[in-house]
Length: 294
Ligand code: FES
Image 1 (cartoon, rainbow, N blue to C red):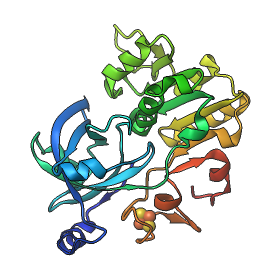
Image 2 (cartoon, protein in one colour):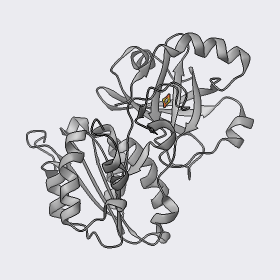
Image 3 (tube, rainbow, N blue to C red):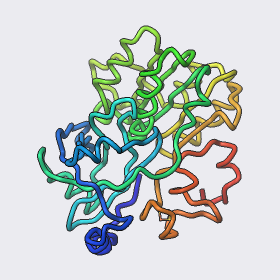
């Protein structure tokens, strides 16, 4: 998960008055969706219509979200750039800033600066089969690129979605999972870990890598977007390799270690690589080149 940045708050307020690069845009919370007992989605709209008009981003980019007086948090933009009426972010409650976000209400104002980072190579993905694989809250960045692809459906070949969570209660974006499952030209498989099912659960039961092996998407001319807990990624990679996926066609997004988002604080770099500037999107061939601590 992303790290909270409570140290930024003093700088943030001070810099804001100078109108510098740390200045956030103001966004109004238009809706709050309870995804799970500890995860919420904020639907945000720019307070200034002129800012909304000029704001653009690409699927895979992230932003710094601020709760004034509390600090900042880094989250991916979870909504699609094909749907610009709102910007959405999803977050888990785990610290000071996210706890403050938890106490916010519809109509409250939050800060956003960004977008930052690189993005999923959607133009290169066109004309190919796409497999989206995610676990838990890792669906947030995958949801962004998934809707982006689905909104341009005729430019892609076969689309497969595999999503898993520890339990039925931990599944996020439930109504959208239903929507994807109802699409005739998309294969969507939703799974929960063994023991996480409810009596009325009709989806799969099993860990994500096992389900990917069962679904067996062909690796030829296919791009896999993978995001989720490290353990899920660790066991999914060999499955994809066995299915014939090239390292360059296995793409993930690294989301931790962020602070400034601007390549300035040095918090996110490993060797010469800055996750905030060179990433957060990397393919597996690039990740293999990174130092071991990655
Ligand atoms: S987050 Fe500060 S340098 Fe990357």
